[in-house]
Length: 313
Image: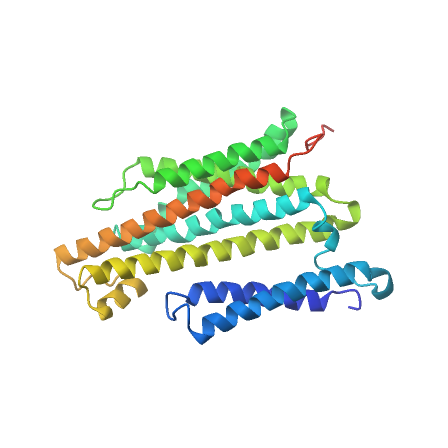
């Protein structure tokens, strides 16, 4: 127990939970200027600063304290390691957003049951592990640098999300939508696998365990933040558009809270609300494409000679 970095763990947990809470509440139950949102954001910033300051302190004082830092400061001093953390942070965003929001779209817009909506997520859910399996096999079989596979994966994520953002808003999606899901799914799987496989080759032997933990934490945090961001944008857009179409506030709240709230509405009114919600989901996919495209920039941070490859045994 004496070697556990309890202070760092508590600071990291507080910083992560508070920023996610602020983003989820802003624009939904509370405004951006509400005391809850401001308090969460300010406290989160203070927690992040304290976390990195503590990580620096405990890393430089490790010989005296004997504690193992939850985030060794030497990670910050490496361009490649920071690039990997940012890359998996950005990859976690599309993964979590798509898994949550695509079924929501099918329920809210196409009036499908949760089971039916989940089935329509299968192209993404099944091809994601296919990409994760292909990445290390291709890297080892053909001695491809993992960075090259990551760039290709980012391109597939961006393409798939951009195509999903063009889904029709006045009718059910076409069969091509499921192809777009598969493209994005393979791309996400390629990048997640590459980053996990790359980690042991990019850190010192003593840091392998904590580096893997940091990568998983960064992916989860990216997913939570990404979901909070797109949810806030979606809610704000739908609320504004429904208000512009003269929907009463009670109905707007009902539409945003439940995918089954259209049952009591007339056909024309329900169709208009569904079209607005569909446009909101398309907007979310545009944001996903942006998060995926940002991975091209972080790939530059991973550029090194020689490139990281998987050695043949």
